[in-house]
Length: 205
Ligand SMILES: NC(=O)c1ccc[n+]([C@@H]2O[C@H](COP(=O)([O-])OP(=O)(O)OC[C@H]3O[C@@H](n4cnc5c(N)ncnc54)[C@H](OP(=O)(O)O)[C@@H]3O)[C@@H](O)[C@H]2O)c1
Image 1 (tube, rainbow, N blue to C red):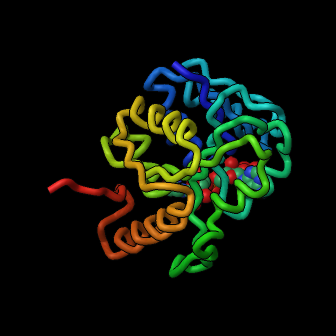
Image 2: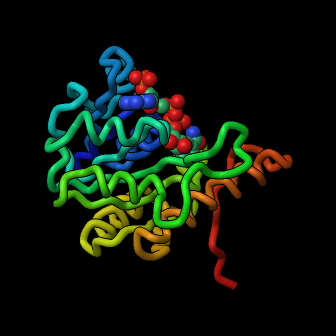
Image 3: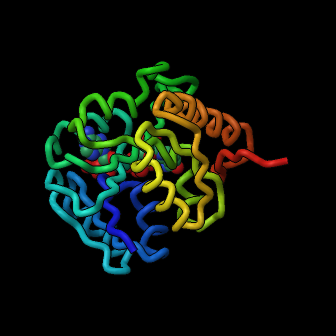
């Protein structure tokens, strides 16, 4: 059992928090809106806690569960409070009509977080190729990971595995942009009629 800190109190915070709590982790929620994170902690149960936004997270793994445009605000607002943490970037930086990305190769949200975060923090992209519903419903699906630090990625892979998801190491942080495209691909498939209970999958054949 590990303490998992989640910044944000929206759909993905609820999905990841619910699944983490169900699988024996202690969930700490931190949101700009303290009442919202308390309500989510109450909903998640299993001893989920809240802490003030901007204070040092309790968990070694910190899931940044905010909209992509807010991810850098979070890193700035927390500053040195994120020193030594493993930051999990789950964002999908879609343009306004989700027909493309606002990021580019070498300039993914994960790259931007790494550039803004304390030097000894590590960034792992994960969870962005799974819709929240599939996470919350305890579906066994692939969870793609990208990150440069071996230990950090192993820690996130172990967390993912503990949730009953299949960790799929996609490579270094340069692959984070590919995962962002993967998120867009997922939305395209969903919009064409497959629905939003989906996850990207790499299938052994
Ligand atoms: N929903 C999915 O199925 C799904 C799947 C894969 C990836 N994602 C990605 O997961 C992330 C979260 O999505 P979501 O569906 O959970 O969104 P959401 O329900 O809209 O929740 C967004 C959260 O981000 C916080 N936030 C927004 N701007 C912020 C800022 N500048 N500083 C601090 N906090 C900020 C909001 O806090 P306030 O309440 O204070 O505004 C809220 O708690 C997004 O990047 C999305 O692309 C979502």
